[in-house]
Length: 182
Ligand code: HEM
Image (cartoon, rainbow, N blue to C red; front, top):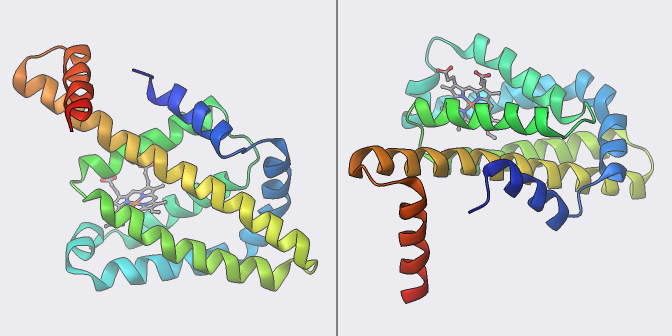
């Protein structure tokens, strides 16, 4: 089975995420440096309104806002290689470890997508360029989510390995066989 890093590279190819996207994202860096904090602020308002997510962020919103701002700056840094993947995988693992259900991460990305679309269209005058830039960002946000999901998947496989005492490769084969039988 492919490693998470190999899957990340494959998905970049699958989404046709490449240098033109990196160039567009880099060009958006000043826009998001100026307006991105509104996304972060709104994000934590949303998390604060839901019982399960609110209890996880209680008393640490300011610290989390700072990490969120770093996460956002990295979206527009233009380097999406191994270092980027490792950082995103680590962020995924942080969410696994706090016991957050993965579907909250999936669902909250909607707020980031919507707010980013508004910011780009308000600040990039050329409509064609704004749309192309937004599409590049959507690809990267999807890649980020895929990596976070890989972190959840890795953790579940590790847990099964620990609980059953079975080797990782054997478990992966059993899953594959089970899928074929469906
Ligand atoms: C698109 C979705 C999300 C993004 C991009 C995101 C981003 C981040 C980042 C960058 C960190 C810092 C990781 C580190 O370097 O240590 C973090 C930590 C954290 N996030 Fe999220 N997050 C997302 C969704 C959520 C949701 C839905 C919750 C629900 C409560 C949440 C709760 C937390 C908590 C509690 C931590 C701190 C964990 C710890 O250090 O104990 N995040 N997040």
